[in-house]
Structure formats: C-alpha cells, structure tokens
Length: 525
Image (cartoon, rainbow, N blue to C red; front, side):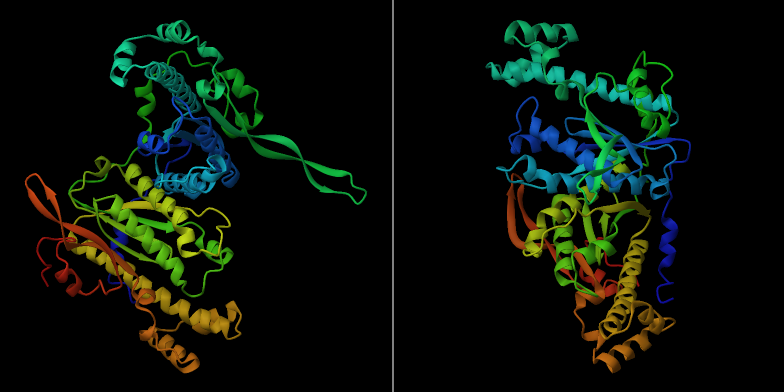
C-alpha cells in the first residue's frame, strides 16, 4: 500500500469501550448557555419556548436512535439512557458522546425557527457531553434522583433570584438575600413578597421533563371502504413526573422495566460525589499533541439524498472548509486543521489546557460547534436546496507525542485523500459512461495508481494531475499574521487571519515555510 509508511500512526489510537453490564448514560449541557440565553433574550427564570425546544430535540433523539430508551432534562441539560443490551457504536464512549452532542445540536439549530419564528440565531449554539457508566440499576436510579433534585433546587433559587431582581434589587443584592436560605425560606419569600405558591408553578419548570417510548395505537393505512387499520407502535412521549427515580413511576412503564430493569427501593439520600465517581473520563496525557478527528455520520446516504456531485462536490467541500475555519476562529487552542471529503482533523497545541485536557469535553464541543456551523451555513453554499434531514458527525481524540509523528499523521490523511480521490474519480467516470457500480468496481480491482491515471487519460481524456488541487490534496487551515495590528496596554500585536490552503503537507517545505504551526524551529531533515 502506498500509505504504509504512515499507517503506524494508527497505533496511537486508544479504545474507550464501556463494558457490559454497565449502563450507558450520555449527559449533554449547553456550552456557555448563560450568555446564549442573554443574547437571545430568553425569559427569566424560565423560557417555556426554550425548554420546549430542548424537549423537542430530545424526542427527535429517541426517534432517531432506538437504543435510547429514556431521557431526562431541564434548563440547558439532557441525560440520555441507553438500553442495557446496547451495542451502539460497539459501546465506544467517544463515538457515542460525540454523535449524541452532534445530532442534538443539529436538531436544535434546525428546529429553532419552529419555536422562535421571530428570532434569528445570532451565533452558533453548541453543547458538550460526557458518559456516565452506571455499574448497576441502583446507580442509574441515584443519578436520575440527583439530576431531578438539582432541577428543583436550581429552579427554586432562580425563581426567587429573578423575582427579586424584577422587583428592583440588583443581582448582587438578590444573591445576598438568598445566601444561606433553605427550601422553606424560599417558598415563604415567594409567597409573602410576590404572592407566588411555588407548587403552583408549571410542572415543566419544577420537575423537568422525561421522554420515553410508550405503545400507542396508530393508524397505518385505510381499507378501501375507508375504515382505518390500526397497529400498536412505540412513540416518544413527554412527561413531567414528580419523582422519576421512584419505584412507582418506574413500575408503571413496562418498557423501562424490560430495557433497563426495576428499582427495588426508593432513593433515601442523594450523594452527588458517589454518582460523579462513575463518570467515564479520559484525561489526555500532558505534553502531547491532541488531534480531534471528526467524520460525517452516514454521509454516503446524506450525499445521495442531497444529490451531491460525484466524485467531488465543490460546494459541499467548501461548506466543510468554511465550518473548519469557524472552528479555528472560535477555539484559539487549535493550531491546524486538515480536511477531505466529510472528514476533518483538528490539531490542538501541545501544551493546550483546553477543558483541562478532558477528552469528552474537547471532542464533544468541537464536534457540536462544527455541526452547528454546518446547519447554519448550509444555505450559504446550497441556496436552492433545503436540508432534507439534520446532518451529524462523530469524533475521537488521539494523542501524539512529537511534532514528527503529528506530521506523519497529517501525511497519512493526505495520502488517503489522494488514494480515495483517484479511485472515486475513476469509479464515477466509469459509472457515468454506462457501467454498473459492480462493473466499475470490477474494472478497478487490483489496479495501481499509474493504471488509474492511464484509464482516466485514455478513456476519458482526463489528466488526473490537472484536476482541482482541492480534490487531490484536500484542505489545510491555519493562521497567518497579517499587516493589521491590535493595540494592547503593553504594546501592539500583529493580527492573525485563518486561511484555507490546498497544498502538499507531506513535503517538509510546507512546514519550513510555516514553522510556527507546530514548532518554533523548522524540522530537521
């Protein structure tokens, strides 16, 4: 194989499987949603439309992924519980948490106008996620009790805080009034000062929302005489239960008992630190380069449904590049990115403290933000085409100990770009000339690079080396210094600009020209 020289870099990949019989929970949280809610002027302390948008995205998650059997959410957070026998992504934590964050983000941006028809998204929302590996059904029960208790505690506090602010107090004054108060004190404050009975507030605010599937009768077709044909189907429903971790609630729903198990007793005392000990966390090694590689999920189907040009759709590639540029502009710790087709690799600085080097946080936030930008920018590149369904991406983090190995990793991806593009160009030219897909595959079986070049030239008058360089070499994204300066108290600094380049990153000449991307000194040959 032409790329065997570089394939050794795959040995640095580490598996992160959540082993059975652990139950898998993925919890997502809005990234800096305090600012997001302020910018988009959410109603305080609770915005019903924003909460219903979150719930609608959770329903979409259960419809898309049958392995998710229960979810619970409040504010900007949602927890998704997978059935105990799940083999989703073969139980690899990074894949599961990144795809969950990505699809949820995609739905959030797609559905925004449904809930906020008069408001435009001012910037891309994103979420971070983590996996909780519950060793038993009792751990899951305690986890759910903890999250719902947090919902109540936070909502009661926020309701008091915002009522005091709306009455004329400053935020600092309101916080001082509430300092050290207990549950009963807050209830009395609301009732005596504002005439609010906390228990009469909407259940959505006080209890949060759980989503799970129940069997309902559904009309699947009609007979010729017009009578309906009904079948039992499992559909997601939203419930605002007082105690989602209680035996009574769980026992009322056979689907939960079957897919997860039963709660033997009610939770007597919640110990958050105990639950936190089950966080499935991979802290990336220090003093190593971090690569976050993302890939489109089922993009073969996505490209067909959206009728992408074969073998390369320039608009689709430029959309990917534009999203990658946005990622570098958003996250300063990313120093370089390389992309081809529906894949992108983001390189973080060797000493980056980004999210304290927690793999789950880094992977999910980058994947989520990229997804958000992809949906937001779609119309910019495909003005005549609507998104038929929300795209999603998965990701992983890999550490590489040296600059030389990082360069070899990037060289491996560029060699793969060339091999795949050359094959796909031949394949689709044969298909467009009348061959079936299986016939085209048969023609190319066992052929080398030189033979493919000859086929393109002799049969289709195509000189492969004259095809657009973006198709052949992929896209590299990095920062360069501009002539513009920014003034600080201690002087001026040249501004950086993020650029897209289609260049040969296998040759050392690129790295000598741009030594500050990976090294302060040019590489030694």
